Structures are given as structure tokens and as C-alpha cells.
Image (cartoon, rainbow, N blue to C red):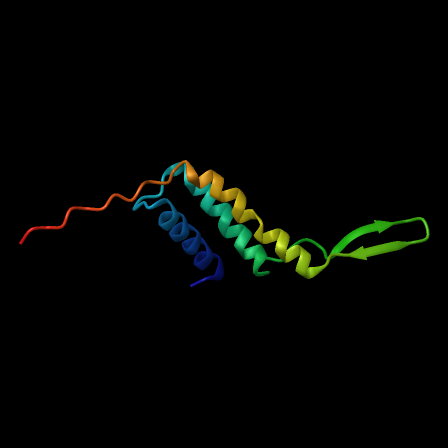
Length: 100
């Protein structure tokens, strides 16, 4: 199974579990795709843009990105997704016990 497909399945399964659903509404498909892409980037499976943070020309200054800081920034996306998923969350209602 390709790495991207694995991350896509994990994103969809995570959404279904969080929202207590058996179906994935069409509106959540793009969110699932974005979550999969972000987790691929966070896991550094998909290369992130250059490691250069900034370049100055006067007296030549180049600063590089801190890998740890970039990782923490890339995982903060989950907080944003939870607010989007909240609208689609269903309440878990206990089912009555079956009588024998």
C-alpha cells in the first residue's frame, strides 16, 4: 500500500471515529484530503519546501528553519480541523439491550 493511501485511510478513519459516523459526508472529503496531506508533510514523507527560512543580501545573511519548530508547527493543524469536524459530530446514543 502506498504511503499516501495509508495516510488517506488514516485520515478518513480518524474523522469517522471522531465524528461517531459510519459515512463520510461529501463536505468532509476535502478536509480528509488536507489532513492526509498535512500528516504526510509532518512525517516528512512529502518534502517540505526548502530548509531556508530567510535570505538577506546586505552583508549576506542566510537563516535556516529549525526542524523541531517546523514539526511542531506542522502538527498544530489538528486543532484547526477539530473545529471544522465538530459540526459533523454525532452524539453516541446507547442502544437498548436486546431481549432474548
